[in-house]
Image 1: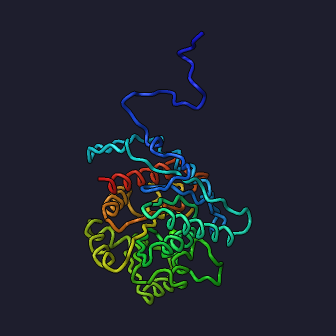
Image 2 (image 1 turned 90 degrees about the vertical axis):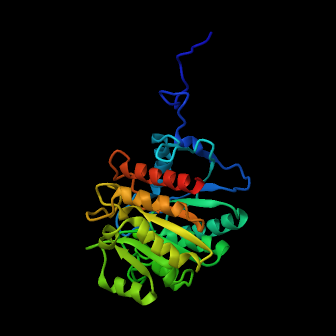
Amino acid sequence: MEFPHLKPAGEALFRDQFVVKAHELLRPWKGEEVEGFSLVGVPLSKSSISHSGASFAPDSIRDAFSYYTTYAVEEDLDLRSLRVTDLGNIRMHPTDILLSQRRIEETVSALVKAHRQMIPIFLGGDHSISTSTIKGFASGWGQVGVIQFDAHHDLRNLDDGGPTNGTPFRRLLESGTIEGKHLIQIGIRNFANSRPYREYAEAKGVSFYTMKEVRARPIGVLLDEVIRSLRSEVDAIYLSLDMDVLDQAFAPGCPAIGPGGMEMGTLIEAVSYLGKEEKVKAVDIVEVDPTKDIRDMTSRAAAYLLLTFLSSKTS
Ligand code: CA
């Protein structure tokens, strides 16, 4: 006997034969060589200065892809034939943060060396993960430039807390992984930083653009300037997206929410611009805490930005 109106549990309530949902682009890795985009979850947030459930974000961002279709109407581009290989999540130690950070670096290093054509997308986690992912990435790529979208410099001293989400870029500079002139920070904002860290950035030759500078001109013009100085200097560019660069109105699920931040449209335009840059070979998205989010707004914003990155890199 057949029951045509019964559907398996977990299957979508409604299917339209002409619509492909974006989560269908994600394919579990079966051990093959990865030549295009990959997702790697990095669920570490015990290293966060403030309370953070960002370790839940890799899975919530994956789930948020299901809110979207594969079709970019603005470009008349359908991503339905694109494949994003989902490598899963890096296993964290329950208590040992340093060991977890070592696992991230070792895993990323091994992955980029084994899959030379892979463009990894790292789903954090708090921002401390970027030290480890960038170290691992640089071991396969050589001289790496970093474009960091962030409300904060993340250049805090290490004596007062060690390898937290306040120190990732200081650790990269002090370990010699990247040079100061190859680090560009965009979206730094008022009452979220301290003068000694601005002075540290200046002393190291780090370029940074405050929100006032971001608001003053189109983001494409600003990025033209950034890319022109970086492109000829480095072998690859790593894009680090701290979602707290966004104003709290757009990203309520970040541990460090605040006003005066970037508008979502500006960040979408920036990611679209940078996706077209050939030297951009990796991206991370960090500081999404699904336990504080409202209607998955921040996870949805993260998934939307990643779809924007995929579409601009493919077009
Ligand atoms: Ca940050």
